[in-house]
Image 1 (tube, one colour):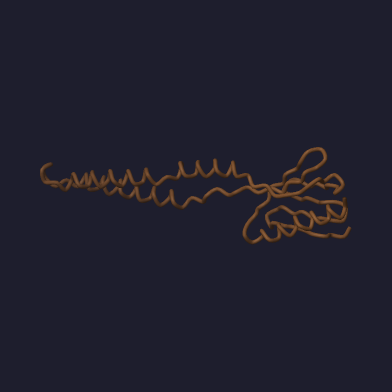
Image 2: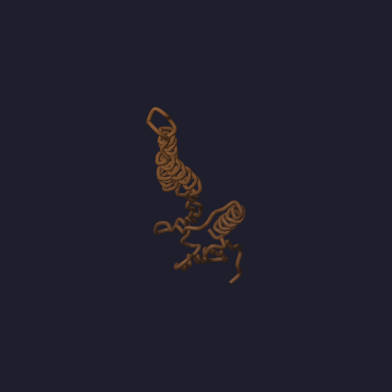
Length: 160
């Protein structure tokens, strides 16, 4: 078995191309695909899922609630400083500082959550349908992915 090309994303996905088969090894899944049944190969990015995840991420991690809490804390603190409300009272200052602190923490935590990742798939178009295998596509391995796809296409052209 002579390996023509191989791609490994270093996170559990490995695919090997030989002269007559493609061997796919993913987490919990191992498959062998005969080249004679492959009509095409390509990459697929699930942009619709990414858009939904990004929209949800922006809604759940909005710093607006932190800004509102901070503003509310400032208003409460200022009411304790105004002499028209009577003698100086420490309670509004302590409550105001508490709201300001919680507001800052909320803003900080909302900005430090990671954004969702774009799911990428190897897609093999077969005689009886298609198969998709999820893998981690990053800037580091994007040229390796492209080279592997080119080798598969060259092999398919020579095979057919």
